[in-house]
Length: 105
Image (cartoon, rainbow, N blue to C red; front, side, top):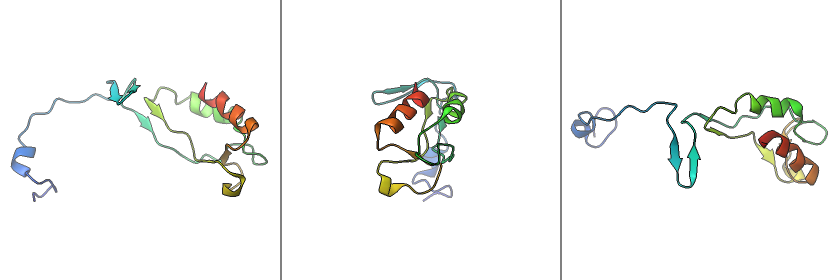
C-alpha cells in the first residue's frame, strides 16, 4: 500500500484527471444537481418549541442557502416519542407537514 493509503500509488499519482469545478452539474442516478455544493444537515433548533412546526425563520434560513446543489434539512422526528429537544423539527402530523412545505417550496 502506498503512503497515501492507495493500493497502486504509482498509477494513482501519475494519472491525469480533469479538474472539477464546484459550479459543474452533477448527476447522481435520477437526481441532477445544478452544482456540486452540498449543504449537510444541521440541527438549527429554530422550529416552534411547542409543536415542532417550521416557521418563517426556518424557511428564510433555507431560502438563503437555496443556491446549493443539494440542501439536506435538519433532523426531524417522525414520531412524538422521538422528539429529542424543544425547537427541533417534527413531522408526524399534518400541521408539521404544512410547515415543511413552506420551507421546501
